[in-house]
Length: 242
Image (cartoon, rainbow, N blue to C red):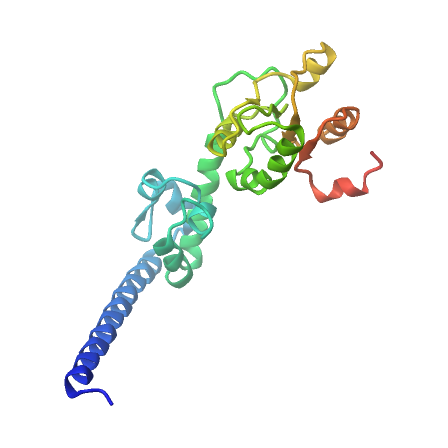
């Protein structure tokens, strides 16, 4: 049996827990009411509000300017830029207009990141010109590690080659994973093949452009080489004759 003193202490702790829980619930309810009241005052839709930068009390310029990562990063528990508080608000407080505004702003900012002052020596399709997420590189580390062991190379030594240049993020992503010898330059891949200037490499790793002839030409190049390659390709490729 518990002593009266212990029983009294447990009751006090239980009351404190209930009180903190009630305070959190009230705070969340007030925030939700504030957001919804802002929504009631909104009449010109999420798109126009997003253009002004302030939506239902949220300044999108501040939200995106002071927090690293993208909207999907903030909502992904496995991502380094995951925001638990934001995820809770997204699930429990944000209405459809506010979500649309955040999604639109996110797309706009991602698109701006893809716009560069670099003069590319090849035709750029905006739909193709997107960097691969850091998570995709993390997923293939076990495979790269196995290949390195088979070749007797360390992460610093193994030469990785990504022939399709976007904005150079591939080098930064691999560097964080310990792979420092990465070749990814602003040059025309097909021109390097034609002029026989393809660099020496141990593993080809790339997420190629999906439009036009790129996937077909990449497969023709990689299958003619007896060198390991890791290619991120769309599912429809499996049904292609090449």
